[in-house]
Image (cartoon, rainbow over the protein chains, first blue to last red):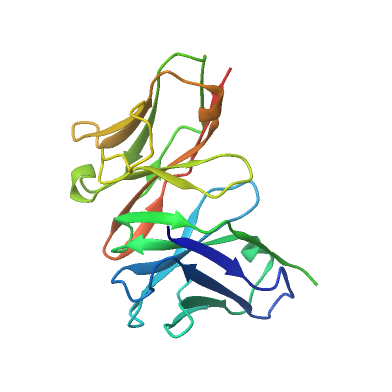
Length: 119
Length: 110
């Protein structure tokens, strides 16, 4: 069955760029759905960051839009997230997931990766 | 965009039934489908309800959900509670290509 796995640095310095990649297995990223990023600060709730189609159509959370970029690499069956100018408030577990039509159904999820912003 | 409001916590005894609410602040709850996710400690969320009241394969029929236009809210009901149901539960909906989550409800089964 489909599985997703996040990868990337676990520690990022303030003002620098957070970069994560999600590798999809068991299904092609060109299968017609969207692919999303969701984050969860320690002890807090879920926040949608944005979603991207295999053809690079993107939708971002308006609160993060100025700092976020998503991209897709169909040759590697991967999609990626970049968050610029990070602060301690960006410290969170970052999840990637399949997103059926922008929030219609988000499933399955990756296991998540903790990114800490600290000097 | 609207806000989805959930109770911070609920508790119930094993074998009993619990209902978790999710209130939409503006716009009709029926305008956009509601999903529910279960998040056990130190685990990723998993989908337990989609399209207001549909269960993905593998989710037991002890989990059910509905929407109520009169209160403009959605509800998740779990019957026959077990300690395995102890988790955080999040409602989620969307609007204008924007995804929103409720703040989450911690379910304690004691």
